[in-house]
Structures are given as structure tokens and as C-alpha cells.
Length: 464
Ligand code: BG6
Image 1 (cartoon, rainbow, N blue to C red):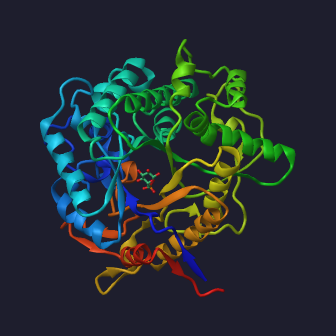
Image 2: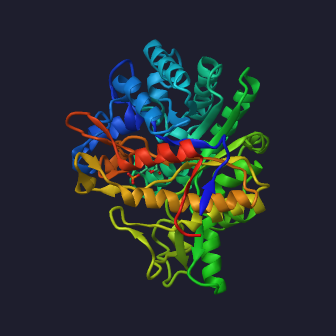
Image 3: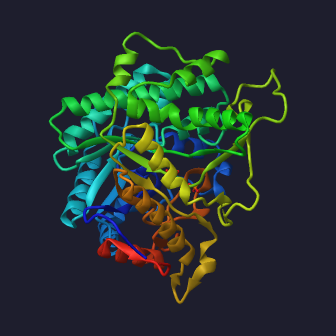
């Protein structure tokens, strides 16, 4: 069967500044939360590899952009580093950073690759975190100033902007589950950071619309469909709670400019609501995006709680549901994540039916593999499993498109094997293999496959 996509469909991949640039403490950049945490606790990073050991895009950007071209990209998303552009988080900007980002954007355009630019990928400048990060509204304002500066500096050429990548991740990592700095476990503080992040988002959207820039302003959300174990009302209610907490907490303000009443009531019931100030409601309402990026890796399966909660323990999302491991689920054994291709279709269908069918694209989807060198043959990673993974997800994207979804493209995570937070280089996702010792880049089989797909605007499968 032939799966053809629109001629102007975006094909490409995503990456981020802190995971690729390197020069994490050089070229005028100041430390962000990752540099700081690594200095404090290097043992919490896989094999002790920290944020200075990335794929050195800061020095290899021209070569890497040539590889983007070779692997069929017509578009590419990366982020700007706030701590590189404005070392103190607010105040004067770093001319070396401006020159660097100008070169990157110009080279992308020269190669016919549309730059998609994200402003924040988990990388709060330490100078801002020292003031409380997004717990502090002054940091929210500093972020909006940073966003406005980016629009002013690069908005003549960049036409696709994103305020945040997966804004829920620093919230759950930093304030609930202890996998990001500042390693706090406190739901109410988490809710405050989440709320203020969306205020920061809305302020940046306002600043974009007040600027001379044309193009799209969006946000990138990791949408994880919540599937109940059964249709028993208790399981369905558990799945709804997970959906409210992990999806709609960001999706509703981004697409409707307001929070679901049900979520507000739920947090109110457990006394976990953040403080709202006069004017917040109007501000949030102005943050409705032009374009939604969707990151999808795996579903969330839940069931109703089996046991009573300990009332003396800190309130956690898991007070409202238990995780459910569906017997017989398909797994990526090298990452330990379920593979459920249909999930991508369910997300697009939900957006079409319940959110007025927004303009959107798949901004991340991909397959992490630990110890990927086991698949090296004659000098190349033969990642047929990744090709299958992508093709099978694209089949579902294609079906959603046929039903009227306004999905405009598909980007993989990621272009080149990169450093991934406390997992460092444990899970490899790239279309291009990185030899850490030599920094040599070698295109994987999937990179060549993607180039073919982009060139042919789709692919053919053997089934009828
Ligand atoms: C995505 C993030 O959710 O997952 C990336 O946007 C991250 O920044 C990627 O690198 C892979 O994560 P992991 O934990 O499998 O290495």
C-alpha cells in the first residue's frame, strides 16, 4: 500500500541547545541548572557524563547542517540557550551567542532547511533558578524579555517559534519525582511552577504578537494518551485523572486559553492550587497558540487505586490512580517503553474532535536504544527496528490526515545521538551515530531511509 503525504509536509528532526551545543561553560555562556547539578552530584548522571560532553554542535554546526541535508530534512528544530544568550538571565546579551545563532539560522536557510526555534528546553539559567526559577514571578517576566529579544534578533528569518518544549517535564522532574534539579518533592510547588510556566508562555505569545515578526508561535507538549485498564467506571475515572494532570494541565491553556474546571476542582479538593492574581485569567487567554508541537513516545495505562493512600505522605498524582502494565503489550526492550503506534492517531483524533482541529505537527517521536553498537554492521548501525517504528507510526498519522487532521509534519527525536540529561548517552535515538571519543558522525540506515521518504513524500508497504 502507498502512503503519500502532502508535498509541503515537514520532514525532519528535533534537538536542543543543552543536549548538542557543548561549550556549556565557554563562549560567554553561564551555567544553567544542568551545569550546576552536575557539579553538585555527578554520580547522578549515567556513567558520570555531564552537560559539557555533548555532540559539539557549537563547533560542528556547518558539518551537522550538511548531514541534515543528506538525511532529507526540509525542517529542523533546535533551541536557543537562554544562559548563552543572556548570561545573567536578564540584562546584556552575549555577542558571541548572537553571532553563533545567526550563523546557524543563516546556514539552515541557505541549505533549504526551515528552522523551527524553541526558546526553552529544560535549561533554566542558574542565575534565574537562584531566584526561585518559575516559582518566582520576576523570573516569568525575565523569560518574556528573553523571548522578546529572540524575536527581535532572529524573527526576520525564523518563522516557527516555540515557547517551551515539554513544559511539564521540569515540573515533574524538578518538583515531584526527583529527576531534575532542584530535586524537590512538593505538589503545590510543582503546581505553582506549572502555572507560572504557562503565564510565561502567554507573556511570550503576547510579546511575539506585539513584535514585527510574522509566522507562528507555538508550544511543544508531550501528550501521553491515558488508557484505562477496563471500562469499569473506577478505571475510567483513574484514566481521566491522569489525563487532567498530565495532558490537559498544559493542553487546555495552550489551545483554549483556560484550565479545565475539573482540574481546578480536583486540585482544590486536595488543597494544591497555586496562587492566582488578578489579570492572570486574561493573560492566559492571550496565550492560545498558532501551532502545536506534539511529542509522543508511549501511552500511559492506568487503573483505579488498589490501596488506601498514606495521608501523612506528600500528595502525589499517584494518589489518584495506579499504573497498569497491560499483559502482552509491545515493548521497545532496549528502552523499556511500550510501543503503541495507534496512540499518535488517538492524540490527533482527540485534537480534531475536542480542540477544534488545531494546526499541529509531530514534533518528536522516536526510539531510544541502549548499547546500540550491538547493531553495528560493516561500519553502519543497521537500525531496522527504528525504521519499522517510524513507518508504523506514520501509517497512523496518514490515517489521521485522511480523516481531516491538520497535522503538518513529522519530526523525529533526534538528528544525532545526543546527551540526554541524567541518562547522558544511555539511550541512542539519532539518525546519525556519534562516536563519543572521536566525535565522528556516521549516518545510520534510518537516516538514509528518512531521506528517501522525504524525497518521495511517503513510502510503500507490502500489504495491500
Ligand atoms: C524527550 C525530550 O522527551 O525525550 C528530550 O524532549 C530527551 O530532551 C528525549 O532527550 C529522550 O529521553 P531519554 O530519557 O530516553 O534519553
